Image (tube, rainbow, N blue to C red):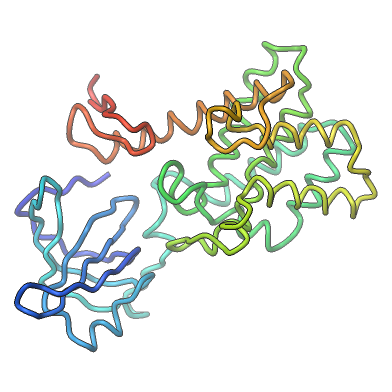
Length: 312
């Protein structure tokens, strides 16, 4: 990942993730822009913003920026010298600006389809294929991030997360033969499906009204119930209940306060919770490390400084 230095002049295309108009002490207005390119997020400031610029440079706009890197209160920022909207002739795709290098949407989707075939249960496989065959779910699943701020926060990040968690399960399940393989794999594939209704879009996503009201776990369980009903599978089906339990308890014990609606009560739920947690936390640390130039860097997710020395 590119590391910018104080005093450097940058000329490149960026996505405006957030925008805030403020007033300077002299009465003029300026814009604080949060800009992003390939997971490098930076605060940029446009001084003496005009009425026309306020109308042009909105959230989710793609812009070409020329600016100078400065340090303000210990953080690198960009003082914008020149800025314009991207044009068709620039041939800049928004998906390219919010992607992570090496993450290929098509390859991941192909891998996920192969992983579906690993589920032997006819009941669970029918539900999985029914859900993933829905165009809206498939389009969102393969484009949206897994979260807004903490992990897999990039284009197709949710798909990347699901494939990694499922791959981890396939590697570890042979070591635990008493754990129900189909229940775990189905949970891996379906546990975050509610996020397809949690986020508004892939570009600078926000929470939907349903997402704000009931969260992605409940949204995912509703999708499962709808798919089961359509397939003629009763909600009391034991396999379906065990998968739903794993999804509901994916963040561990309720007492920990991380979002589970019930504490893990089966071997499959315990197994899944820990591989999901491992993937989420290690990936979050990897992203902090990629963005840092220091040996120790504070992480909002871990709420502490983490060791991020790349040579260590």
